[in-house]
Length: 202
Image 1 (cartoon, helix red, strand yellow):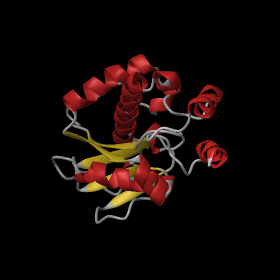
Image 2: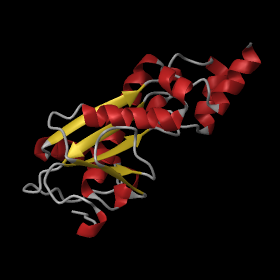
Image 3: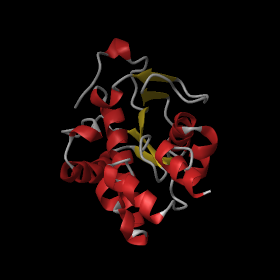
Image 4: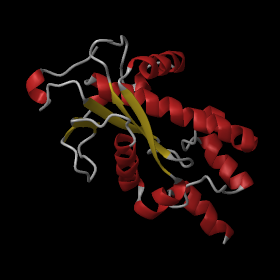
């Protein structure tokens, strides 16, 4: 289980929440955040940045985190909010919603990145926190698996876009599909490749 040296986190109790998001870079879908309060009496082995572990391991850890954590919650910002606020502030909003949705409210929150959302919580931001702090790693995994499942569901609705393969990220195949089939209601219209197609078709 990954931890920072105690002086780095300004809190030493049990109600420490870690929060991270998934989905800043994609051209489609919500940005999804997860907040997790781990149980120090039920350590979880293998926590790491969700992007650095396999899909199969993420799925296993997703189940274990939900079974062992004191509290887990999801927050989202939808495509309309992303287009209105921009992706940075939509990510902050999703993280705020995730922490507020926890069944047990934390006494301190650690956030992946270099800033914290506008909220009343005692909080700290840690660059690469998902690689260094267990509860942030757990949040990273919950957010990533949840968002990937969203995109698998979207693939059934829009099979021609292959959302199950690229998860909404701007791969060549996804950009080509947007040009060929157009922009769906799930695409972020302020993102360059999507905006370019809309401008060409207007």
